[in-house]
Image 1 (cartoon, rainbow, N blue to C red):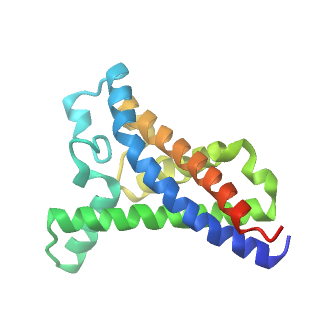
Image 2: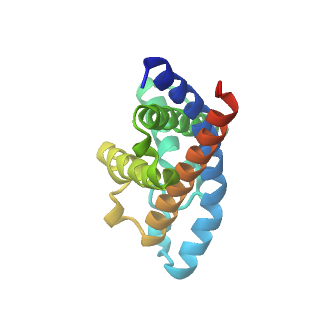
Length: 177
């Protein structure tokens, strides 16, 4: 695999990651409602960071990170600004994760096994299951309500699938063949 093909794979998949991030955001509310129907969290659990994007959108990990940065620098930030910054983080992460996935898939097509679903699981494992709790911006998965773990993990699977399918489509339409 040439360096140019890997760079092309990364760039295409950065765009695909933006699409994946959009789909992830769209599937989270219905997944939250579905999982909470079967595994209802307590009122106290719903107040945990990251446990209730429908009711407490400004209490998700990226919004809490923005608030912490504002506090550390002595800046006041409105709820609207915090939500806007949260969206920037969400889509930047989608593009970055998509680019990494695309570069790996271009270098070794076996990395795209499972149409991106396994990659989505890995991305959940690397973000909300480890890195985010390690920073203190969210509890560990075993401390969160089961519903929150299920909808968050499920939305990452949707991200992986969407990113991969979009990557494949964009690769086809941009190929020189």
